[in-house]
Length: 366
Image (tube, rainbow, N blue to C red; front, top):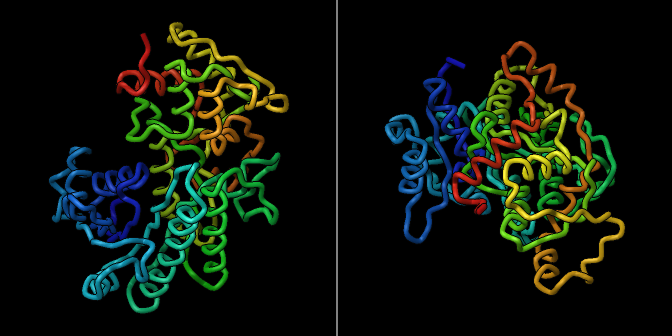
C-alpha cells in the first residue's frame, strides 16, 4: 500500500475510524481529510488533534491530515462550499465509516444517522464522482444487517428480503446498505465491508471502547446480574479490530472488489461456555453465572433491580443467542496472498480481551 492517495473519511471519532486513520497514516504517504462535528468546547481541529495525540501520531496533524467541520445528517454533510471544492479536486477515495452503533439507540437516532447519513454520503460521493477525481467509495456496514433474530446463513452477495432485526441499529444499517447497493446498481463504484462485533486487538486485547459483549461481563463481575438467558453451546461472532482494518484496506486495493460486499468476521466464533470457562479460570473471584434456557427465561421473575437492567439490555441479548452465520467465500478469496488471515478467536484471544479489560480498570475484580 505504497501509492499515495487522498482519502476523505467520516466517522473518525469512533473506534474503527480512529484505527483506519492510524493505519492509513503510518503505512503509506496518504493524505487524509476527515469530517468531524465540532462540540461545544472543542472545534473539529481540536478533536482531531486529541485523537492523533492519543495514538501517538500528532506529528501528522495538518501535514498529512486535516479536519473539516461538518455533520453527516446535514445536506452535503454540512461541508462549506469552499471545502467542498477542495474535496472534489483532491479526493481519490471516500470511506464512509460514521454510524450510531449503540444497540439501544432510538429509531429516530439510528435512522437519522445510519440511513440519513449514508444517503448524504452517497449524494456527496456521486458529486465527487461526476465533478471531481474520486474513483472509489467504501461503506462500512455490519454483518448483522441481515438481522440477528433468526437462524440464517448470510451471503456476502446481498441482503435477505425478510430480515429479523433485534434493534434499530440493525434495521437502520440494513436500509443504509440497501441504499448503497442501489447506488452500485446505478453504476456507483462502491465496496461494502460487513464486520461483526468488533472487539480488541488480536494480540493485546486493546480497545478504545468497551461495547456489546463487554457490558455483560462487567455486570456479572460487579454482581449486578446473576442470570443469563443463553446456552453453553451458543456462539457469538467477535472480530479483532486489527483484522477488520487490515482486511478492509487490503481488499480496498483490489479492482475486482468494486460492487461487492465482504464479511469481516471470525470463521470459528467462540461459545458462551468457552467465555465463562475462561473467565472462571482466569478470575475465579467473579461470581458464577446461572444460565437459563432462553425459551424459559422470564424477566418478570427477576428481582426488581435485575429486571430493570435486563430491560435495558434487551437489544443486546440476541448477540448471546446468535443463530446467524456468515458466508466468507468472497472475503477469503480477496485476502488470498495478502498476508491477512482470518482471526483465531479462541481461548487465548478471550484471555487477552479479559486481561486488557481488567488492566484498563473496566472490569473490577477482587
